[in-house]
Length: 524
Ligand code: GLC
Image (cartoon, rainbow, N blue to C red; front, top):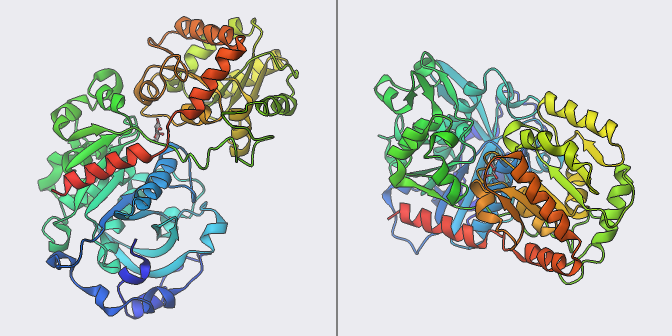
């Protein structure tokens, strides 16, 4: 793929002086970033020069990406899909995210400072520093503004609307600076929705932007970016003539705006693409989804199968493969020891690694768990979330210390020890756009029990690589869990099931090809 050297425009003094204070810890290598660029890089992309077949340029716009910062599945998908697309050799893939202060220091120190500019947003004029970093063939850009992003975590602030409006506007503003105009700008979730909206409204008459196609991917339709209409001009800097694009139910709805403005929109599984056309799943957006159905598709996420590999994962107590599961027993024994559960090899461990929120199916779990705990099972739960559920599971653990372990934390190392040491993985979500945990569990030979919704439906097939139930009903779930627990006793059959689970293809190979085809189709 093209590197910084061939694409960063040679800039003047503005890039060598860092005018505000970001006090950022990132290394300043302005010189490298600016002086290395050949002068030829400054040619106008809009003139479509006649050169040999170039790689198609894809710019991901997202609020998080592994390995730099992650609060959930979105980051994993942005990090692993971009890498897989770059690996095809057909795309110049770049990703832009905010430079949060929580971005891991080990990376931050290696970032290159490219320069800065000022970004207008209504009456605001805000500093925008640009850093870059190359990883696995992908160029990552980081938007620096300490006022907006030097805060713990990524979201949950009163001014999130303004923060991501600034971020989205910066994405368009850095294009001339980098002399990089993508063929497809691929925006993820509501935080990046405004990038697609600005592209097709405020920027649509600028020549360089006219060839850029927008793809908007919905990772979760629950979070849409609702704001008061009063903020249209003053905060979001959207002209009144475009109000109809973002207006929904007398409010601004950024996800709705991105659906309207993008050439295509997608979701992270085919089933979820169907589900969001219905009132039950759409969180109010089904009329908009249906009206734009002609440009909707669903592509199942993959996972980073190299990162989740039971044969190599260093977090595990012992490694094992689909051909020889014997070390999984060590993982189980050590997990039981770690969590203070009796070390019983024959007692199946049912695990959940999940945000502790209602739509993950916790209402079903709390309804029947005490009954289930009467069986010969152990139950392990890991995650944080609603105080109500956190308290519930803590309390349960104190009442059933030999049967249930509640770990109310977010801990990547422990999650892998649980994925590898457990026997059954429970994911009874009420809705699940894709879900990655059920795929990860399979990679460790832990058999998923899932509700047939969204990506759970698309990835887990009954008795092929897991167990499923259809209705959002606690006793249906319990029936299927008990079926799994009883099948677990048949060692030979269970081993076959584990083998099929590990062998399920959850790599990006197939889905990255689907995205590739989608991009090419959009560029026709
Ligand atoms: C969101 C969805 C989850 C999906 C992930 C990545 O977190 O809730 O189902 O797997 O995005 O697309």
